[in-house]
Each structure stands twice: as C-alpha cells, then as structure tokens.
Image 1 (cartoon, one colour):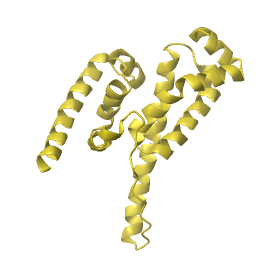
Image 2 (cartoon, rainbow, N blue to C red):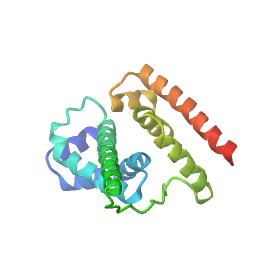
Image 3 (cartoon, rainbow, N blue to C red):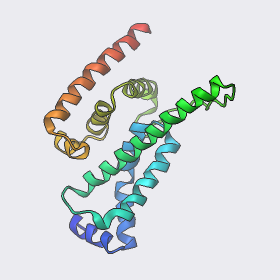
Amino acid sequence: MNEPELILSLQKGDPQAFKLLVDSRQNMVYNTVLGIVQDVQEAEDIAQEVFIQVYQSIRSFRGESKLSTWIYRISVTKALDAERRKKAKKRLAGLRSIMGWDDSPEPVHFDHPGVQLENREKAAVLFKALNGLPQNQRIAFILIRTEGLGYEETALIMKITVKAVEALMHRARENLRKKLERYYEER
C-alpha cells in the first residue's frame, strides 16, 4: 500500500491500515521519543500516546507534509510535553524535600535499543551531555544524528528554516564538544 492509499484508508478508519502504520512506524516513534526522554518505560508510554493521537487526528491530516514528518512532529511534541511535566515534578520534589516530605525517585538506567552493549557507557555519557543542550539544539541533533533525518525534514518537523537547523546543529556540536571534552579530561 503506498502512502496516499494508506492515508485514505486510515482516514476511513480501517483497522488494518492502522495496524500497518503502527508496525511500520513504531520503532521510529519509540527511538525518537527515547532519545528525548531517555527513559524506556516513559518512551513506551509516550509512543502509545503518539499512536493514539495519530488515530484520533488522522482525519485532519491535510497532506501538506509526508506522513512520517507529521508523526515525527507529534512524537517530538509529546516527548517535550513529558519533559516539561518531569521538570515540574522535579520542582515539586524540591519543594517536598525542603518541607521534609522527601520521596526521591529511584535513578533511571538508560538503555537505548540502537546502542550496542560495549558502547552503553559512552552512549549514556553522550545522552547526558545531550540533556544539557538547549531544547531546540537537542531536538535537531536527535532527529539528524540519531534518527538519520535530513536537514529539510528536520526543518519541517521543527517548523523552522533549513538555515536555522544548520545553525542549531553547529551550536549543538560545539556545545557537545565542550561538554564531552570536560568529561574525558576528568577521567
């Protein structure tokens, strides 16, 4: 089934078309979300939310971009929403700690499926450094370097120009270089 036929079938509510969509795009969605939230369970939950939104919103899809671009945009938005909620919870946890109501969360072990076992430590360091980047730099870097998207599609997903993506990538590389230099100097 080609993309226009898939979209039409999805818009008609065809469950087989939706199953085909999920089967073909679930890794893309999961890996994108995981790159942003860096928590396996949370990424699984958000990926499900993404497909629920796709199912609920497909009738409003106008085809102004590729279906994958639209799904990436939903994935990034959902992941960033989760990050904002997480930051709000951390602020609340800080307040709870000050008030003596400490219920600290357990540390999360980061495990990305695209990283081979012998590279897990390096990947954890890289993803920690990524978390220190400004949001737009981090998203551009993840979409281009982790997901392998081009600058044009990344620009469409982020709703910015290709020049802006190039600038974000340049700054992201420079910032990561500085952060990783410090890490390796300390070792």
